[in-house]
Image 1 (cartoon, rainbow over the protein chains, first blue to last red):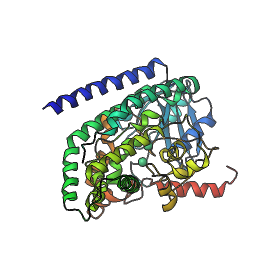
Image 2 (image 1 turned 90 degrees about the horizontal axis):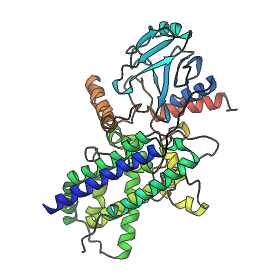
Image 3 (image 1 turned 180 degrees about the horizontal axis):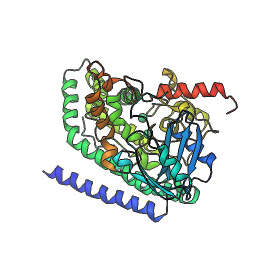
Image 4 (image 1 turned 60 degrees about the vertical axis):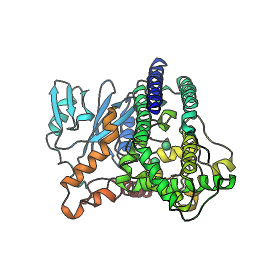
Length: 142
Length: 299
Ligand SMILES: [Zn+2]
Ligand SMILES: [Zn+2]
């Protein structure tokens, strides 16, 4: 029985320690505010996310928090911020898009990934239309 | 034989201190090396893994003791046995680790350690909760059966784990040649955590990098190419429970939907394998990258 109390005490101390460390990371202002500043950077990030993805068409969010990209095979990629890093998904038929003037809200159909609203300006309408013809999930890519 | 403490218990305060020091370094040099939410997830992984250890460790130790009682030979409790035990345990760690990257059932647990897009000391504590389910303890059994006392094996395993803590950093570039030749180092282990095609499935070492050099899985760090950390399909969430179980969920879904003759393959084939080739494995990614290198040698 004594062993259980020791384990519980260790757990409690550890829990307090990890919360303190996470708080410290925030207090030290770690993380940073990453933005996509150029089409070249978006291209680099897209290729980093999916090896061989060469965009031929890129729409950048006005604030640089994400981008939509299309490659020569017609594959479409959503790129967005994730903390101090970047994360991307190829879009498939589960994609939900909502257009509100220059703003395009895109959900990938993956709950934990969440939806992202990109400020694309005039390009938003064209991209929204493009999102209506997407391949089925798991279909063999060329 | 004396009762041995868990060496990791004593190391934890040092871990915390070193993380604080590295955070201070990051604040001055590169704040984006840490992401507070990612840090919290990684540390929660560490805490949860100790709970899993408490829940399942007893049964695993019991199994090791049972095998030791039926041992092939008796290894004495002397200094050379400790050295031998440590080296052999590290070799078994290499085998465990390599299979953890090449067999999806094992990867489902080990992916936890890799799913951060950051590489700092907090990443080291990102330890799995489901190692028992992935049968990781199998790799601890041969030494017990050979005749090493389970207490000795687990102590060596603990020291091995402690060693691996400090190599999870970008604050240290490289050590002298002789050290990099023999030991696992921050440079070698950065490569292991990288998703750059040239680095996939390499540097499985625990303490001694010589195993990778011996078995052909060693890849040196290239200074010109910035490293990208994490997994091929990044999580895209800081949801702890999703991070813990996503690959197990993925396996369950795949097995459910797969045609009968392919169901088992989704358990034991490499991560990313599909019966219709619709996803990438590390091999297909590397092949595509190599083809592109050939086509445009300038890059
Ligand atoms: Zn690994
Ligand atoms: Zn690691």
